[in-house]
Image (cartoon, rainbow, N blue to C red; front, side):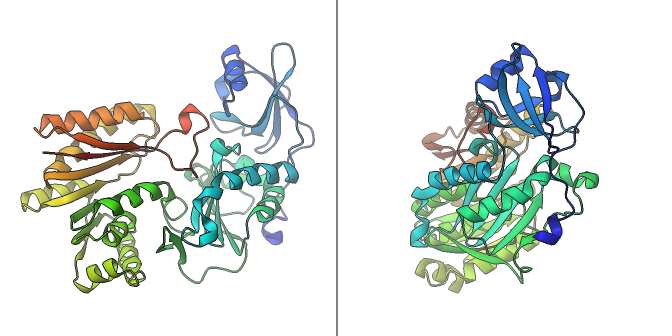
Length: 419
């Protein structure tokens, strides 16, 4: 850690003073973690990414302090609201300890679940910073270079809260396009511990999964769907299951563990499907998974999801349980209409292979599409093909992905039957 961080300057001692618009003042008083560039009315001086910015109201009273980023539309990510505070190692340690206490009910002490999100960015008071735990390997993902000057305080604070054998740094895509702000750091760098010799294995509700923290999507695994995967396990007994956008087989493996008769995993990534096959192999101490492996009842299809669903429909393949968990279709407001159209097409195609009385599980991780709009789009698409859905359950965020502000709500999932 020392050599990688030694050349990184800390934040400037002098803080930046900011005045903002009345609307931004109201948002900050309400606890919102972002100050946008257009909301800044006055600024005391220029600054580098990571300098601390103090925001004052119209009476020159303290409103908040946060991380300044001169190149991002989110100009300040607020760390502390209402009362001044020294932003140092002790401050970071307190925030991370609070996040760890919130996750305590996950039952990590039993060993059944050793993969979870420790820090969920803005929603845990650390905007633009995520920490995922895979047993004793941690992945620190940053979405703004404003965190880099603070890493010498953040890393010891993190180690005080959870055991760390290996710490992997992941960088958001926008950060990777700003090498001048990275001071030699790169996506996938090992900040603590020796290089990884292969995939990391962790447990989730008793099942073992491998993860590639250095090259995998996001931090290597989609931990936010843990509770929905467990729900699928409870619905899968005796079912022919189709898992679309399966990635490394999370839903597929839970379905097998729940007694599924057969499982088909569809993903465009062949390496992800190869990892899914390995995940099945490593869980053969579970009799239900062992049966699926022994009977060669787990089929993998390396295809585009839309094309695979259409082909399976043409081939008259049918399933008792269909899971559709796509990536975020709408990362910008302008993409919402296209996302809703895509969700509708997926519903149509999924119902084309779902047996009468079967269960559809359809999710969205697009924060730009609110839950009610998503559920309405799915119901309309189902009604349009003459298969109106009867809801079993709507679900949202698990305990380790708390919602701290409106834009922090992104995950929603529908469990429903179709005639």
